[in-house]
Image 1 (cartoon, protein in one colour):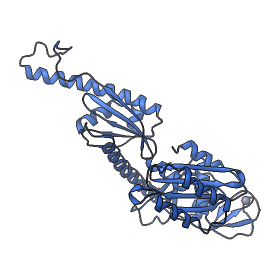
Image 2: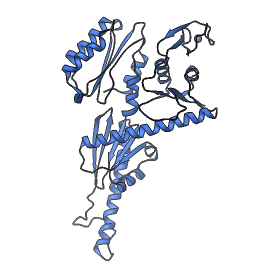
Image 3: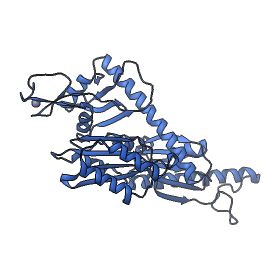
Image 4: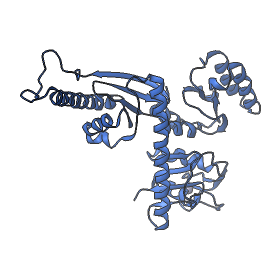
Length: 366
Ligand SMILES: [Zn+2]
């Protein structure tokens, strides 16, 4: 299971040798191993890193269990470095040879599908899921008191009221409220234990709202979506709904982020929407959130002294006076640097955003 920790390891991997990064889509709905293996071979046919190609092919041929819908592989044979991650969400085929592992697609997947806590709330029993990159990693359930009046009558405050129905309703509501409150408290613990970063709540409107209001404030702010679902829904239905709602929430977040960047830039505040300005902000360590369109690449130059990235051909670095080298993709390097510095990276996938926003931009730290 690919985690934030794995991403950090890949980001920190340093070498003087080229690294082969391979992403292979193995979605079972699109074929079988017999079809994917030759496709992998044709993807790798022009790669000259023989040892790495062998390592990757050997893994896919003999060790890969074909679980999930894709696999990401990183190989640097001279360093004896080989990592593979089975991925349960769809990925696009690609091969990269670069001086570091090509992590952008994985970072993107973590951003879209990582760290979800899902609660399916009901008046009696509530179910909780920790779900990460399209897989349920943990499930838990909390059972409340039955909302029907028990034979002993429980601790109902309905005593003395006239008319059984009103009393019954009151009692039922009271127990349901208490059950949901307990479930919310239980959920907060569950989310904390599983390092959940965002929360989805499923159930009837009434139950969802009650649950939400009983969540601690910190967790309320991490609720990214809610959805109606039957309390008897199975795991697959819950996960499908959660992915859908989570994905939409992520897109909405991105749309707003781009709006904010464009507005800030227009006002001369903390936004940039141009590659050169973005690279300068990267160098200054000022990027809070870097936003790029999926698949965007741009050649550039990198200072061999301080690593300053630019699209302009300069004779020497304005910061350290060292010479520049030409690089095939300044965007990838910028992404890596931002992630390493603890900034966020958002990759826009088929999403309509402001016209002013072209391929890249960023929200800056003040
Ligand atoms: Zn420099």
